[in-house]
Image (cartoon, rainbow, N blue to C red):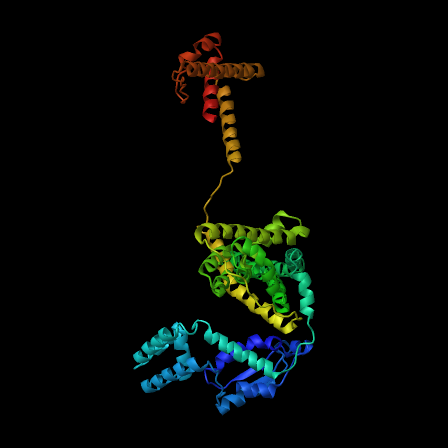
Length: 551
């Protein structure tokens, strides 16, 4: 970063120790020029031993020159030939280790770099050296030197200090014009966007606008796609004969593919918005602004970055949590990642928003669901940090890149890359699930899972009405007065049974049972009614049995 070269040259200082041909691209040179910064590139090449090329990555300026310089330097195989002086004490110890490494004669890495790393106690390098033959003495010597000089220098930071000194020296020597703008355009924007009070509400408004943009604009192509697949299903029904194959293609495959593709516009627009915000530099500010909220629940501000990735996919979000150095911060971040709604859930949210809310509320509802997930994530983060991973959170340090307008090509590239990832990950699963649902609902076939009980009851009632008519005719009951009298007797019999039942319940006795089989005799319970209606009782008893069997 040419606009922040003093800090960025520290990486160059580390790479110089590898003694490999090197090209340094001073990227964002347009931002440095806007700030009034100028460098003596020839002097910088002398001090670093590297070839220097000015570039502007986002507009592709200097790319050709960078490629040409890379080819040329690689062909020359010329190492920089520049070393960082670590002071008389350390240089003497480094020389001792280099001599021992030469005696071993088996190590293929740059010997001075190995010596420095052994004194830094770099576990990875120590493991590599131990795999070479004849290096036991070198490892022991490095440990002895560390023990010998531990009271004279702080070996944990001394090498970093000397590398930083080298970077500062190169920067100060090669700087021909210091920044003329003490307050950059980005600084002016940050006064508003990272304001202590306004920063968080602005971030929430930006997110609300994003989700409304996604749902409002995305609904148009989504409708086109749905109409297209509906027409395709109708066409398939006319082409393929009725049967299981037609059902599989129409209700399984086409419906499944349509379900996936109909939400692609929403996913692409979501990724378009997030890519735009990332490329402008605002997302880094969002991490800074949200740090206060993160810290309130015991999280690190850096947790915002992997959690933000969780809105795209939870897998890279969990993997991205590795940027957190503190184990507790890392574990809490991973545990609350599922509360961040990934892109595969957006179709579900959109479906429910459309089903239960007016169309003009869709964007706000989806935004509310996302916000609710964030709230739950914060609550559980607080619980996890207090009870499972108690301890102080580390301070938040993060570079804020300057604001700039992203190129259309870069933004669209990010959008399509993430969109394709959605189709591969979520799309294949949704399609498979659609076919599985079709299979479950189709097989086994020709099974009657429900019955029209009202129709069955009506059918039985008609049967017994016919039976009642036959009974009355059998006993010679033809006039309406006779039929009414028989009905009155039947009602009296039913009342008698009910009274006897109530009395038995009150006395705690068994309820009376009336046998209603076809050849059964009238019970003694009906003797009084029988004595009073000797002529009509046989017909009434037959009608009573019909009525009881119908119930």
